[in-house]
Length: 463
Image 1 (cartoon, rainbow, N blue to C red):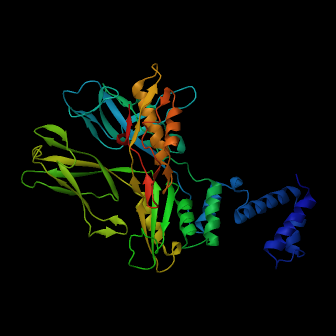
Image 2 (cartoon, one colour; image 1 turned 90 degrees about the vertical axis):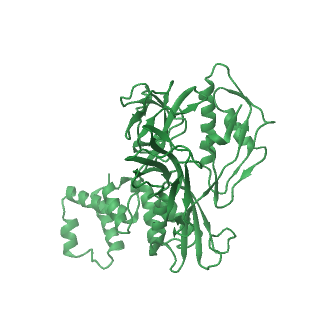
Image 3 (cartoon, one colour; image 1 turned 180 degrees about the vertical axis):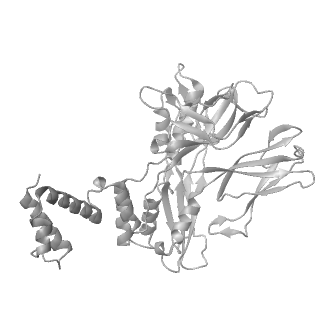
């Protein structure tokens, strides 16, 4: 605890440093400080010190959230809010149902309660139907439908491993749930220290328009962007090589969102196409139609085709993506029913592009496009020996999940070595041996500066 004399000395130093024209010998200074009761003097000193912490961005963890937010707002910055985790959940059933079972959007699923952790809850993002056309899981010998889910709240705690979501909280009888992939994309709200760092970058104007400047701006303002790759006009992979002043920014993000578009089909006004409204489009989840009273799932490249309008661009993004239907094989939909298209898109690309388009965030006259990094997949084949006491299907799921988690979070322009993948598999409980002589890939796999390495279940074969 400082003495009265020490407090007065510190206040005098503060005034001389920050208010050099103020005469500390004047009567007003004496009335405010020299003659003030000790208790009041201590309160004034605490307030001055606190204000200086805000002004100088020191001891930022002691600054109240609202005060730092207001200071950041004076530089045009807002605290990053954190994001929810997303993933996919499977609803399982041993036998096919005699009639469709509706799994409505917002169906609640959760982790099991343990003595060490609380229940973490997720909700489905779209309606789904368990019909007699459900897919079959050969590892678990059960039928299933798969639906996108989102965590109840923000936070990295919702980034879960495979096989951890097993509890269905909604009352839908006869179904079991399981996530066979990790949930990803959950981030905590921005800390005071991170926000303070962004304020410093903002008022120092660090490297505006340079490679390091773009990388810094994006990483500081988008906590869901895992990596960036900046291409300058002289780069061989630049998207517009014939024009000077162009910059391409490729970003890697694991955040995806689900969307749904519907078209109303009638015999008087049949529809053959549907334009997707949420871009940039990544992939179709499923398309369902009602034909002869039965809800059916259309087959890609037979019953529907995705068409990109090459003449319609908004920045780096196709401004028009259309689904065209072909009902020659399955038959026409029933009169007065909906064609439902569920699909995945990446909202981050648009957000980053809008941010970069602000005049304060790029060099005047430069033309900057933001792209999602191109995914480069590769085949993984392995011959493994498992402990006979472990569950085969669960161990296979854990192997796939571990490989996908490692590869899919690597930065852009990464390289994967076969021995690294073998070591990852060997660390999984229940795996006794991985045969290196038959393991694929047999050599390293590399991505270029606009690519990210990416694995799906279909890329991984385990025997």
